[in-house]
Image (cartoon, rainbow, N blue to C red; front, side, top):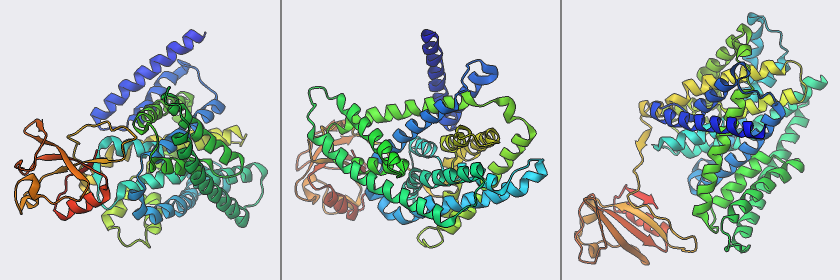
Length: 494
């Protein structure tokens, strides 16, 4: 029996990896095809999997690591300029989306012959009111496409921090539907602020503690254990925060952000481990969600038409209205940027995970919510997920991110930073030799790349426009400021 389980699991993973490769070539979101593999194998119970509790547990573990890893890969210097709009989008934007979509569902339901209360309509809307961090991180980072006006940090910050708001709305509305009580705005707001405050405090605190642990617990004789240690810190942050009535999803994202913006032992190895582990969890999560759904239930008219209608309404009306209202105070974003932010409102695993919660809590009609949310997710990934790059190009907001010429693995104990810069004609205005370029102190050009060849330069080495220089510096901020004044645009931190 155990051997059969491993055999089926291996087949699913093989199929998912091949689907991911196909998705990259077709320009489709890999996560959509992972979901499709799960649905295909689960059709007519070819692979039997019906445990909502286990799927919810897998979802919790996966989201914990996805958010922590996403925080680690985010530079605080990039999100600082968009911190305010990101927080507003993650709170007010989610609440507005839930309210607008909830009203639409309540008005649409009678036309489809579905009996649904306004509270139940709000619950259905709340489960899918946040964007999905797994989908946004995966699509934006695999596209390797630069976005102007700090849009990528904004979208990643929003998707990484808006789950708490949707989670709180879902929990509150589930209790209202189950108990039949009236909504107390003051109680709901106090719950929200307490959970958010505790999540932020615990996240920052445990993030700093994690940095200290990683740098002071000496297990260098078995460096692979550092991955296990960091994994334990992430799980502890999430679980302790949740147990003490804080929001674990926010806490683990902030903890990852803190860890990622400090120097820790074996950073390169940890980054590789968490990247691979995150992909594995995403594959398992989307496979489980695909296996658990019943295709025959999805194609029922009351489910099919409701899911399609909500998906289209969210993409073309609810998300744009919520985005425009949320970004109204922030004048620095152009109209095209606001349109793009509204377009990248991807739904994915998170709404489906939240839709499992009413089922496990015994809410009547919860299976209907799950099926509708599943369809909305498919609509979002098909329409929005496949056009993320095309929309950025159409709006003129994208640019090609240059590939790094120098591929280095720098030991973590080396404090100096390596940067790749491209030589321009303006840079050679005062002379074309290396010694004519006035770089900051404690800075050294260690390699030059030209015509598919690498060589070590000397002071009298002549430079040509288009050359790539590998520069090492003890003060990287001063170096970056200097090269920008020289008119250099090709700058990559190695």
